Length: 91
Image (cartoon, rainbow, N blue to C red):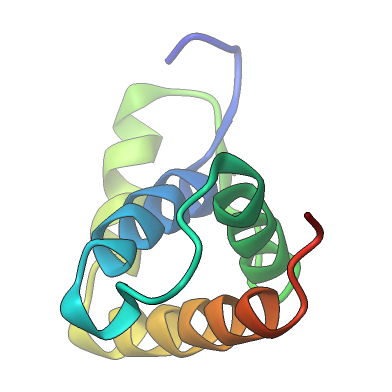
Protein backbone atom coordinates (compact mmCIF):
# COMPACT_ATOMS: atom_id res chain seq x y z
CA UNK A 1 0.00 0.00 0.00
CA UNK A 2 1.57 3.25 -1.18
CA UNK A 3 -0.87 5.52 0.67
CA UNK A 4 -1.95 5.41 4.28
CA UNK A 5 -5.30 4.19 2.96
CA UNK A 6 -6.67 2.40 -0.09
CA UNK A 7 -10.11 1.79 -1.57
CA UNK A 8 -10.23 -1.97 -2.14
CA UNK A 9 -13.25 -1.58 -4.42
CA UNK A 10 -11.17 0.67 -6.69
CA UNK A 11 -8.48 -2.00 -6.99
CA UNK A 12 -11.05 -4.65 -7.83
CA UNK A 13 -12.89 -2.49 -10.37
CA UNK A 14 -9.68 -1.46 -12.10
CA UNK A 15 -8.58 -5.07 -12.46
CA UNK A 16 -11.98 -6.28 -13.64
CA UNK A 17 -12.27 -3.51 -16.25
CA UNK A 18 -8.89 -4.54 -17.64
CA UNK A 19 -10.03 -8.18 -17.83
CA UNK A 20 -13.41 -7.34 -19.36
CA UNK A 21 -11.96 -5.03 -21.99
CA UNK A 22 -9.75 -7.79 -23.44
CA UNK A 23 -12.64 -10.27 -23.61
CA UNK A 24 -14.16 -10.96 -27.04
CA UNK A 25 -17.49 -9.34 -26.10
CA UNK A 26 -15.90 -5.90 -25.75
CA UNK A 27 -13.35 -5.87 -28.58
CA UNK A 28 -15.43 -3.32 -30.51
CA UNK A 29 -15.37 -0.80 -27.65
CA UNK A 30 -12.71 1.90 -27.43
CA UNK A 31 -9.75 0.87 -25.27
CA UNK A 32 -8.13 4.28 -24.85
CA UNK A 33 -7.11 5.43 -21.38
CA UNK A 34 -9.84 8.12 -21.32
CA UNK A 35 -12.62 5.60 -21.94
CA UNK A 36 -11.08 3.10 -19.52
CA UNK A 37 -10.87 5.75 -16.78
CA UNK A 38 -14.44 6.89 -17.50
CA UNK A 39 -15.66 3.28 -17.17
CA UNK A 40 -13.84 2.91 -13.86
CA UNK A 41 -15.11 6.24 -12.51
CA UNK A 42 -18.70 5.58 -13.57
CA UNK A 43 -18.58 2.11 -12.02
CA UNK A 44 -17.10 3.36 -8.76
CA UNK A 45 -19.84 5.99 -8.51
CA UNK A 46 -22.40 3.17 -8.39
CA UNK A 47 -20.50 0.96 -5.94
CA UNK A 48 -19.77 1.42 -2.22
CA UNK A 49 -16.28 2.41 -1.11
CA UNK A 50 -14.27 0.03 1.04
CA UNK A 51 -11.32 2.00 2.42
CA UNK A 52 -8.75 0.27 4.59
CA UNK A 53 -5.54 1.35 6.27
CA UNK A 54 -3.68 -1.92 6.76
CA UNK A 55 -2.68 -4.80 4.54
CA UNK A 56 -4.51 -7.20 6.82
CA UNK A 57 -7.74 -5.24 6.42
CA UNK A 58 -7.19 -5.07 2.67
CA UNK A 59 -6.96 -8.85 2.48
CA UNK A 60 -10.09 -9.32 4.62
CA UNK A 61 -12.16 -6.86 2.57
CA UNK A 62 -10.90 -8.34 -0.69
CA UNK A 63 -11.93 -11.81 0.46
CA UNK A 64 -15.31 -10.48 1.55
CA UNK A 65 -15.88 -8.86 -1.87
CA UNK A 66 -14.46 -11.76 -3.86
CA UNK A 67 -17.51 -14.01 -3.71
CA UNK A 68 -19.54 -15.24 -6.67
CA UNK A 69 -22.51 -13.07 -5.68
CA UNK A 70 -20.42 -9.92 -5.22
CA UNK A 71 -18.49 -10.45 -8.45
CA UNK A 72 -21.80 -10.76 -10.34
CA UNK A 73 -23.08 -7.62 -8.63
CA UNK A 74 -19.88 -5.69 -9.45
CA UNK A 75 -19.74 -7.02 -13.03
CA UNK A 76 -23.31 -5.81 -13.71
CA UNK A 77 -22.24 -2.27 -12.85
CA UNK A 78 -19.05 -2.55 -14.89
CA UNK A 79 -20.88 -3.84 -17.96
CA UNK A 80 -23.44 -1.06 -17.64
CA UNK A 81 -20.64 1.52 -17.44
CA UNK A 82 -18.88 0.02 -20.48
CA UNK A 83 -22.06 0.38 -22.52
CA UNK A 84 -22.71 3.95 -21.33
CA UNK A 85 -19.16 5.08 -22.11
CA UNK A 86 -19.26 3.19 -25.41
CA UNK A 87 -22.46 5.00 -26.39
CA UNK A 88 -21.32 8.42 -25.15
CA UNK A 89 -17.50 8.60 -25.38
CA UNK A 90 -15.93 11.90 -24.32
CA UNK A 91 -13.30 12.07 -27.04
